[in-house]
Length: 272
Image (cartoon, helix red, strand yellow):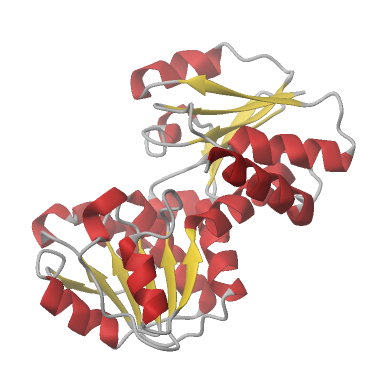
């Protein structure tokens, strides 16, 4: 059986390490997992060319929205968030799933996140998954910090489908206002890429802070939160647990998180 991660760029992906370790731990020696460069306009053709040997695909940027266009069916979570990171291929059917939410939930729960006030930084697809994860853990007081509310239409729509009504504040461009919002948060999730959150501070002692970025680590945002006494989690935890959920969907067997974690830590250390 075969599976792969698709995206552009995809050369940096750690998914082959995670899935390969899972197959080895599960004794699935005839399973193979690769990485393929694939743009949005190439996805339909790639999927159409797959045969019955294929069990599934992991999808990274920029394919998480266009995945819905090549799926025969979508999970309720995909329908709500408007994004998929997984295509399960079975019986000639393509089912779109979203395991990013499961990854965020596991990362937050592992750090002891509660149901108190939460702040999400950003309004992209990962922010929509973060909203779904916060709903899953029972958080109801949610604020989303954005640069422009006018450009957050997809997040608003996803929140409505999820039955959530987060406060939307245009505070990302003002570190002082953002710090005030973060200071009252018991959970903070940054979905911002690269240096976009570098100037932001405010998450305080006792808060759980998840930064979905994991390289380089720690980010300035994560380091500031840790210095203030927050419990900080990197995006590696999300990556690990979303991959374990993908393994379960594709193989029908629980993802061996322990073996996958060891392989991930070794790969990250080798790249450092």
